[in-house]
Image 1 (cartoon, one colour):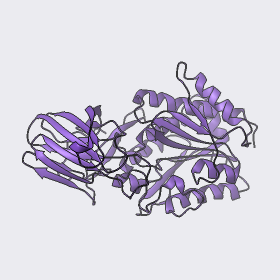
Image 2 (spheres, one colour):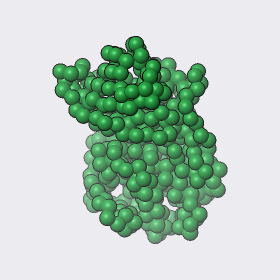
Image 3 (tube, rainbow, N blue to C red):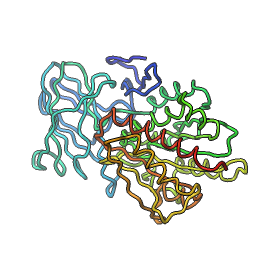
Image 4 (cartoon, rainbow, N blue to C red):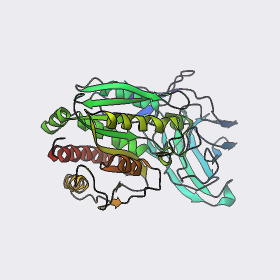
Length: 403
């Protein structure tokens, strides 16, 4: 599929997958019910597409606009200031955009796209609070050719992107696509089961608990695709294991352009234990069902995220896991596939913090990890990292004793 330009009145943010089955970015083409924006002579701004988000804006003249960015709920909130909006100019030229923040300040380097497929970074500099509403912000300049264009904190990757990717994935051998359940607003939370459906040993992957964490998604795509490879390791792995992957746990937060939360005012990765939200309850029920089945055993859990730098949050050596010693063997194999790349590891375990990594380990005793990719990590490198993580994981698991 190749979506180009804009379709007036068409309203779906669709993804496109290339013939090799790898993910491409998305094409924003459609509406959203909580859109905000502003207009003035020669320029308009809107957020009428999934993931579109800003608090307020003002067109100061035909080539200048100020945009205020605020979290979905009152602080405290993790500082992940998401924004995404569309500029529609009357003519070509340089457009200056002042981004102000009500909390936290700048984190994501701004990007722009005409078609949602090709994204480019823009010129940017920090500006003082006196020049914008809020606590200070970022001034960016975009060279417009006169067409509408999108400005966003990261590439726009929304439910339709996942749908297009899953359309490709489910055509592969050893894949079953299913709906895990519904989000708080009734959106399907889809999953795939990969490998031998009769296998006793089960690995669970989850992604996108936090809406702005796009780079984690860009790593999870090639990770899953590597599991579907035609090489000897992947074939042996699928014969012995079954993998359940839930790539988009928080579709509501993604669609609304939230910084951190779902629509229940809760950070999903602080709800593992309380399980107050339907999305985390779905994951709990999935894991408990595996544990309750005498023919199955959970063996590994990985949660994909983004942060300011590439890192893998692991358990410490004090946490004994089944399989024993998995962490060190996996990470050594991962590093061996990435010569010259510094694999950053941060061991830790806080059972008082209701995050997925801690809860799954405490409940089931298996190795767990939070796999984080840097916000601005080179996108080609992200693909290499996701592929290497899957290759090393498969090789390591295949070396463990059969359950």
